[in-house]
Image 1 (cartoon, rainbow, N blue to C red):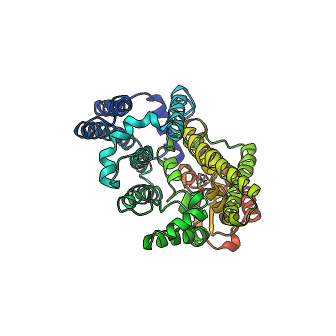
Image 2: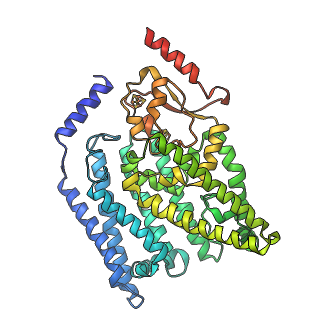
Image 3: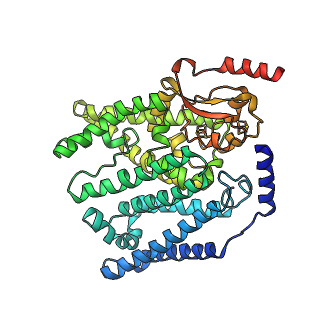
Length: 457
Ligand code: SF4
Ligand code: SF4
């Protein structure tokens, strides 16, 4: 039986049996996850500064053990008992994955969480105090709302990463890539910064470079690092080399995927927790136009702001006020609202890469390098394409992959993050992520003539 027939047979079987076919163990796991989550939510009103350490630690251990154990077991069991890969059935009708009631509800919860953590952190006091024990152990000081955020972010990336590995277990690229995402988040973006704080060193997130971490090359940050001694010099050097040396060199060899799909925490969360919503990205030409205007405007803004801040001592007072206002706008409008509230809050409504696609200046910078000076391309074997559209549907960056595949053209788009899902979901093996010589990246004429010859046979 051919691949296509086998896939169709499987899909028909799945559709016929579509529904909540949960095992008893999965029901128990779901219940445990629900109880754990409710205990965490309850801490918001029931825990405060006067709650005893013993009670807080017990509460913390029980609630997270139930939430992680139950959620992890359920997610892994659900995917391991199923055939590996993406399931088409239900994707456009399920409430959770097709902007139904569950999707909206989760969108509101995510968005609400970001609004509270940015502007009303006092309402998270109970949950924050619950994490004091862990924070004391890792950072040597009581927790704040950003420690709680980092903990939740890391747990979700790890747990949903394990789920993604189970889901794509037939594909080595995704197993290795997702393992690296989990490792980078856990070690470089969570444990390392916490340990830095414990030893009275600057708190640094080694996986975030300028311009994504916009303040990393601001004069105030660089001077602070230089005044912090040996480790400060190392960290300042790390950020400068990361931005101006590692970024162009690695992007030349591997495309922007080395960062956006392997290292970056934003991409990490999108490809783990957000994987179920990747099909919601808008594929229209209009959104592609908006994307280009929007993302390069943000890049231009942070570039100008950084230059202006370095020139600030030489600017007149009126100009300094303008620089101050631009900085405030960037922190609020781009750093908080766009990257946080919209970037993650809108996952269940508009897909998982809203920030990466429309706002991230790092993605814009990497995209320019990928477009004009990189060995990366997605090659297409156009004659094999049956125009099923799976590739376009599951492209989280809204690229109409099928358009290129039908013509046998290489895909060289600034926005492609090299996640590889288009190649994985293609039932005909048409697409392949490759690094190769730069002189034959654009094969548009060659692709069309080859396709013509194949079709005329
Ligand atoms: S074109 Fe393919 S590899 Fe690139 S972002 Fe879209 S799905 Fe990922
Ligand atoms: S490239 Fe593959 S997934 Fe995309 S339309 Fe063609 S056959 Fe379908």
